[in-house]
Image 1 (cartoon, chains in turn purple, blue):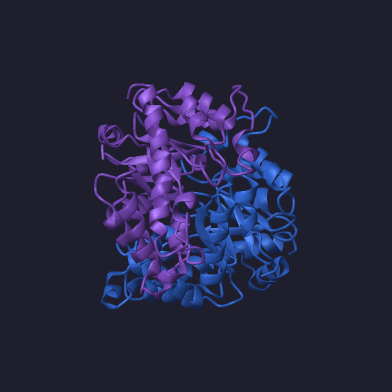
Image 2 (cartoon, rainbow over the protein chains, first blue to last red):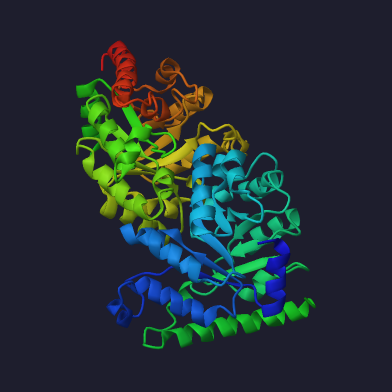
Length: 270
Length: 270
């Protein structure tokens, strides 16, 4: 999927929402447990009722691996069910030496058919380049939304930049336009600094909803003239309700977010 | 598995060898392809002929995930086949926000039953602590053996330490004795500095053999009075030969390494 395809989907849907697929057997509506594959059933209902309101899906590998032997098949079938015009990001946070990284890239791109993979930057360029295949994207961890992210990410380096900014600067040499960055919604200072280093890159922004981030401030610091933002929401959408028609509640949460997104896009005349 | 159990295995076998399980369908002896599960057959033969010479096995997740739907089952059966007195390290290089990290930890410890998982430090303490379960180990990436590792890991920080050393220093506050560190065999300067910060921690050392590292220099900078080293070798053992009795060649490679290890342990009167 080319960057222009992503931008055109955002324009068409007036949305830069990514629905995070973190399906947890303990949290999905319990009436689904009667199905042979409750997680797949849950994912399909979520996709059916959100696909016109979002431009991306982000399955989180941990939740599929937790299923054991059936996890990979469930993930593959979930991905096959997602309409082709959506960006599919495997949230796997991989990083390994080059021959192993190539192996992961083959699995994600060839076996699963995703468009992007989240990658940890700690091992450097040769752990990232195997994922830089034509029309695919590396989503590099920059400033993550978790409580202790700053333990490491905000270490001050001798260049004067905090580590996350130094890494973003270095990673710009690895690819022209195939690297996106993970920047938490609660990391407004970090977002401002990263945006100044990468005026045009896409940010994948987790942390809205359950983790307390605010859409308006994300837009204030992250929005570009080509949008430049993909905001991920998982739990508040997936677990909006536990009744038989839980997906209607999930849809309402998406509609509310998409309405806010439309207002922000209208403001900049996108 | 307690640290004293690891040390006692090293003492008994006069070996601190870890056999890396990176089984690749394109590289295993082709006569194995007649079996229903060639990779499992290959792993079993490797384990049968190396288990008395090594104290640990390190399955690399990428090579199992590459198998698609059958990968997890193959990994589980491989792990079940490893004798219980071996340390089993899942080489997965995971890192995620705490609820997701907990999910990964459950999969690795409860479903697969491994003793340790390799973890990337970039997301900080709360991405690591879910893996610090009693008698389990986090093997934290410090100075990895790949070509471009220094891109990020050797960034100079304002404290005067390079990043990898600063991270090791910070991570010491996360656990007393359940964190081991990945230090490449080719990273002698890094090993020296990390050893000065962690005089007693175990290092998992990749990069001997195929990647060109040298056992003697690793021992010179890494060996402690309780050994403190687990040296991983993958490709030179696994792919020592492609004939019907490939495992005999694998065994000879292990014997040679174990002989060298015995000499080094004898030198320090271990």
